[in-house]
Image (cartoon, rainbow, N blue to C red):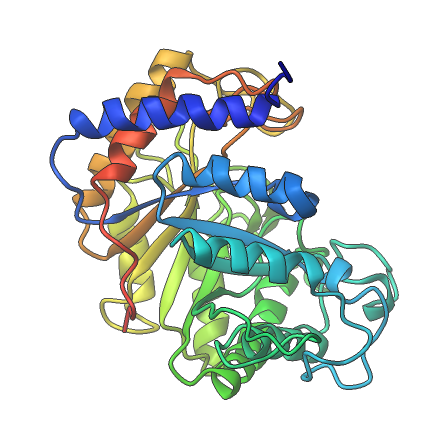
Length: 384
């Protein structure tokens, strides 16, 4: 008898876990519970189908998808606003969004990684030219508007929720962050340029889809400019949101929602350093300067179960499971938090916050997530 591939065995096992978890599901959650698998863009063909089935087996109805600009546009398009420009390579994302639609999973989509042709630095973390990146955002929204046809004439599914970049306050995704001025004080270059990108990208996304939900900030938990000490920082004390809001206001950027990433040090309900669940009221006060009662999407959160190069702080596997539940309970305390996305489905060498180990053996948090996802509402059609 032919041996079943490991991932198919996992999917079958997950079906059993899901049935048991749903049978013991507790109170439904006010906010949306979601899960990201950052490996999706690395798969094609049948392996992608199996990976999508594995994601669906967790009972998640909301996910986050990274669109890697440098891979979609390896050369400069002649018309960057046209999704059909020959320079674009959309194939794997067409397959991802079709697969998600077939499984009734709603994506929240971000885009990042600057193509080498777009900047003199030629690195993926180089600050993106606002015009080039903004026009790419428009092409992305136009291609997945629900009416655009691929090269074979087939209508592509709709994506409605768009995040502008990923963690632009961290130098891993955006450099430079700051520069030293003549008076010795540091100037927040990244925050200022991000506001320019957000202005162009939000305009282009709405041109493609007038009722799209445009989500800005996408702020990581570290990095940026320390206003009090006048220096660039990489620690958790960085008030990145306040700096970004100041420049977004100055540019007159209109956002439908804010995205914040939360990786607290300590239990979700007992961590207070910004950014954390308990410090969200401070964030809300800042966001009210952009728009009163602006909704917030926590599009990354989680806890690591071993030391890695990005997170020295880690917890036991049982703590991860317990704190996953407490994370979603904390999210429910804030009506402005629309959705909370756990990162990630699977561990890798640089990230150990997955529901699966790197060898695809499950952690206790997997069954906990299935229970929560089974009682989660769907992502709202609009967040305005």
